[in-house]
Amino acid sequence: MLKNSPAIGTRTITMKNDPRVLPFGKFLRKTKLNELPQLLNVLVGDMSVVGPRPLTAETRRYIPKMSLRKIASLKPGITGIGSIIFRNEELYADIANMDYHQFYAKEIGPFKGDLEVWYLKNQGIFLDFKIIIATIFVVFFPQLKAVNFFFPTLPKHRLFNTT
Image 1 (tube, rainbow, N blue to C red):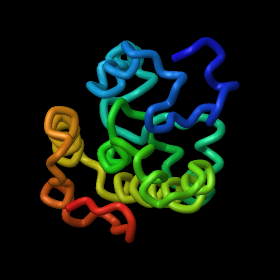
Image 2 (cartoon, rainbow, N blue to C red):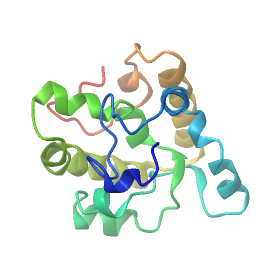
Image 3 (cartoon, one colour):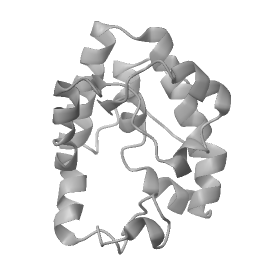
């Protein structure tokens, strides 16, 4: 990203075709290779492989406080159920034809909170394994929408079709 990018445009939320993302950064983000340095955080115990994605101060305020309180005990993860569902979250605001911050506050943030609470209630080694496998699927086969196959009990949302 460009230097001082949190002070430009949409701040800490990256949009589709965000002009702050440089060409090599687009490749890293698309392939999720930009997440590899977080393996060091896993090795030192600051993160887990699976868990809620770390939130910026800006995106944290869009998640309902009740959800934040419930998931506070979880270590952040490199991947998680929210990462799978919202792999291309910047596309949804375009589809809804809304300001991205407004859309994030109204639709994405609350649903991400619901998804992470679902993870908390269902967590276990088998679910973590399924999340890792599903993450690989969405990275290498983004056109496949097999989330309901992997996670049939996920909360549903009227805008985010996961079938």
